[in-house]
Amino acid sequence: MTVSDAKSRIADFVWGRDPRYGHAFDYAMIVLIVISIGMMASETLPGFPDSWKQPILVFDWVIVVIFTIEYGLRYWTAPQKLRYIFSFWGLIDLIAIAPFWAGLLFGLPGGEALWTLRILRIAKLLRFVANMETLQRAFELVWRELVVVFMFAVLVMFCTAVGIYIFEHEAQPEAFPSIPHSFWFAVTTLTTVGYGDIFPITVGGKIFTFVILMIGLGIVALPAGLIASAFTQAREEEKLRQATLRKEREDARRSIREAKELAEDPDAG
Image 1 (cartoon, rainbow, N blue to C red):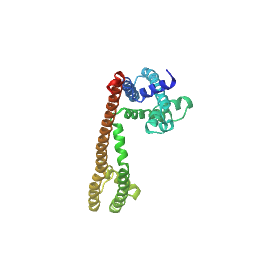
Image 2: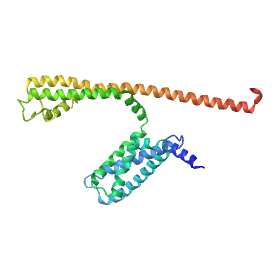
Image 3: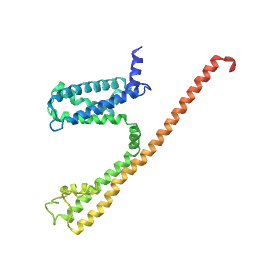
Image 4: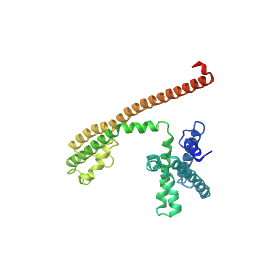
């Protein structure tokens, strides 16, 4: 087997294209990620036995080494290496192992912060979600609309902060001392999570807040509707793509079969 053949087989294996072992690799990585996150969470339990910490640390090293090998294989087999490194999944793969190697090799300060970054390993699970590519395609279809909605939300948030300051500053100078201080009220009101620790007490402030709540419902619902519609469109595109691929495979098999029949019986042509 040549190096090129080995690289091709490894690429099919780690990128899930191998029909026999690709899914087994995916499932193994999912199990390791879940175990890793579970161990990290268990270490924060009150009264966690000290005798368990060393075995967990050793097992975490093993997981990091496996993730590092996975990252190396993905880099080696990636057609465009720089594109993989700076892609979303490439960065997630790197973040999953970087805290360990940074602390071990360079002795960087802020070990607790680096340790906490291990929780980002859970993002690796998204790679193995069957419909993740469809969801990614959905965001690609509507990202411009989402940017417009976000900008509109920021504008409404600013207007909310200004409005509530005008209505409530004199009545509650300690709660609404300035427009920047009123932004927290604007955020909680527009996202419809409730007033929180500050709320209007004047009639004008209450009416203004009611109007903003109605606008907030629309702002929250609009992105959800856009994404749902785009997701449906992306699924239809994926179904069409799969149907096209199946037809191409059937045509290829038919051509091969006809070529074999012609080779076996030249007179039939």
